[in-house]
Amino acid sequence: MVTSHNLTDYETVREEFSWDDIYAEADWDAPNELNIGHEVADRHATDRGQVALYQVGTDGELTTMTFWELADRSSQFANVLADLGVEQGERVFSYMPRIPEHYVALVGTLKHGAVWGSVNERFGPDGISYRLDDCDAKVVITTTDNRDTVEDALDDAPAVEHVITVDRGGGAPADDVVFNTALDEASTEYEVAETGGEDDALLYYTSGTTGLAKGVLHKQRWIAGVAATQKYAVDLQDGDLYWSTGDLGWLTGAINTLGAWFWGTSLFTYEGEFDPEEWADLLDEYPINVLFSVPTAYRMLRENEEVLDDANLDLRHALSIGEPLSAGVVEWGEEELGVTILDTYGQTETGNMIINNYPTMDLRPGSMGKPLPGIEADIVDPETGEVMEPGETGEIAQRGDYPCFFAEFWEKPEKTRKAFVDGPDGEWYLSGDLAHKDEDGYFWFEGRADDVILSSGYRIGPFEVESSLGEHEAVAEAAVVPKPHEERGNIVKAYLVPSEGSEPSDSLAEDIQNHVKEELSAHEYPREIEFRDELPKTVTGKIRRTELQDEAEEEADVEP
Ligand code: ATP
Ligand code: MG
Image (cartoon, rainbow, N blue to C red; front, side, top):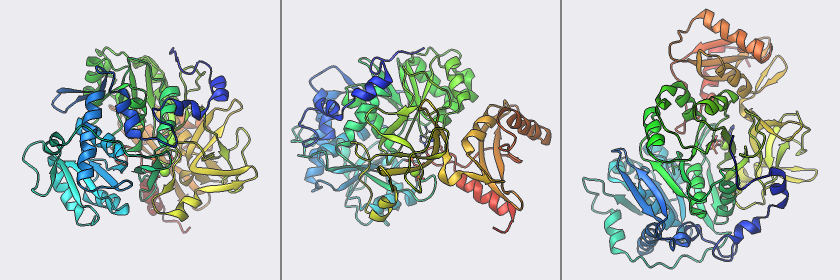
């Protein structure tokens, strides 16, 4: 259905791949001399007309920024940081919407050699201060709309010395640096920091799906890793308009923004939150041809697919990350979006999408695909570090010697060490995610190691059961967790959100159970079903199974 120009033959590219070729694309003598800010902006500034960013505000207004504007503006921002006395390696964090200033601050911070981090706007004061305090951030960039929330957070983030505020009306507190005024007064000449591949660049926090979010440090060399993903997995081409819906508050947002700009691709961004109708209008109005989003957004579009009826779509690729993407959603995408949604897998720690479906590969819907060229990933026994045979379940693991692999959990050497296991043929980083490979090397996700259900001696991965549940027409969303049980150890309990027009009832529950028994297996079906209006989620929209598991445990009232 789709063609790729960059990866005509997966196996050949995998064999011929070299990181040096990617580094060779950079302006400087990478990885010894490398600065992400320079590589993503200044390098393309000579191409005067090329647009870096098309931004649509919540008011529907379009703002464009060319690469030379981005280069100039980010230099001005870097000069502002220099004037404030911010030094290389110090942390600068944002808490703001998807507006052009946000992207300018990102690039400017990197040019200055400071470490960039970001907190998604859905967090409140406690979420903000936890992150700022954990890494002793020195500067916060925000907007007047968010200024009160930041103020509440500052009490618990004593290292913060400066707040830079974008005035969107109402004026900023007297002690703040006002973004636009300060930049206008600053020079557009800036000598980019003399950083190298091993200097600190980004500090992003994980989603906190399984517990407290962890600060994950990445180096300047990270850019080569994400550039490879954008080339081979996202398959960017000249003239593309690329909408990655992920916020800069998550590493995925930074990966797709900076990785795409490394290649000079034009990005699209929308300030507003997810809304099926709004998204359909944007896809209709703008010639967006590459869309990168998350399973929950695709599922919501499926639930409201009538919004796409009159939309004129130009998509060449659609991609997904963050949670498993079921075969049913992939098939829906082929019908309604006209493209095969390509699932990609990665973590804040891996710094990149390391296992992906590539446009030219024979795809197996429901599979995560195969390792990115240049990355060694496998399924490993977490106890022994041995590579598993096809069909055997183990943890997704990888060797840590490629550019975008993380350097450390911020100032937590013990935690960092624990993420590795020594095996007979060397050390592996363990992801904490369970999967197996098939005979042809495709990876199949099973669930987080913490989420696996042990029932009557069977190990049951929640994803397979959830996918099967999702194929039932009455099910909009599903989450399964173990519920303690006297004889069986645990039973599988499913929490279901009924699809529109479906009425929860005992007979519906039974019908759904029979569906899973027949389609999947007799031992994995949920013995208990509970209907809910919604499922608990992280701010990124990932289902929080731990919360449901706690509820199920409490309800079971069984002695462990
Ligand atoms: P925390 O580590 O704080 O518990 P988190 O693991 O959700 O949160 P992220 O680094 O944002 O934080 O997410 C990475 C995780 O998301 C992966 O380890 C995996 O569990 C899940 N994930 C990402 N992509 C996929 C995918 N394509 N299929 C299945 N799971 C995925
Ligand atoms: Mg994680």
